[in-house]
Length: 323
Image 1 (cartoon, one colour):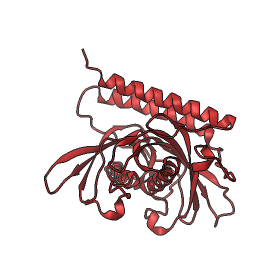
Image 2 (image 1 turned 90 degrees about the vertical axis):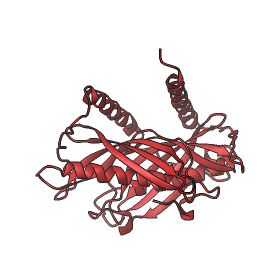
Image 3 (image 1 turned 45 degrees about the vertical axis):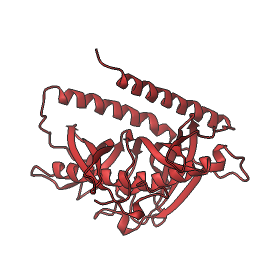
Image 4 (image 1 turned 90 degrees about the horizontal axis):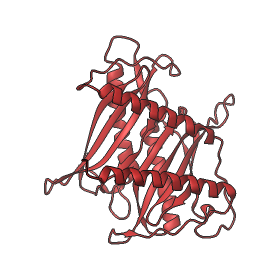
């Protein structure tokens, strides 16, 4: 796919949400194919979680995106897909890796979309691959359980907030789910939701920094429930933590089934996005430090700091030469 001007921000870099949407589409195709590879009840693979996704290099207008997906593990009811995105400059032939992501899907019956089917086992290419996948499966399952307790959290507007506070940059987007957002079965594509989440996170980051900003990474996007056609979704974002050169933004997605009085508003998804601030020349700039005011904001700041230090230590460990 060639990247066009409507895929990019004002600096000419492709939106992180556009790339996330491409990644999810590739994952959905390969996992749906696999889950229907044996004779049995027809199904569609629904996105359950996106693990941490790093934006390794920017993609620009005019470049071609190459997206490849591979199934790396299957449990009884879920599929792990690893996706790589390469960008190609078609004038020079230069290619570079821009993104790596791990996604988890579950197969839902076409006869009853609330029924999760069993996944056909995958054939592993080397010894030990299944055990490695099982460890990743248990880790992401535990992480999902730890995030559900935040599902009642709501972002409330504040009048006349001070600069650099959480309230000053927090933003929301309200979107009516239409047919073009959905699968043939009337549920929102995971990639559509992720693109909207990145859009809101980008607005929050730009308001906080007042500079050009780019997505640096996305920490585990969790999908808690399906979003149906006709629902009104509210995507809300707020800064939770700032380091010297990056900011963490929490994004929450709530779905309101306005045409169904039997169902109440519910939390559909959540994630943490990390953004960096850039100059007009594309060089990294210091990020204005967040001023948490309430006890909840101070608690979220410390939690964000813990995630930042944990990831920083992990990157340093990977960079160290192996004996």
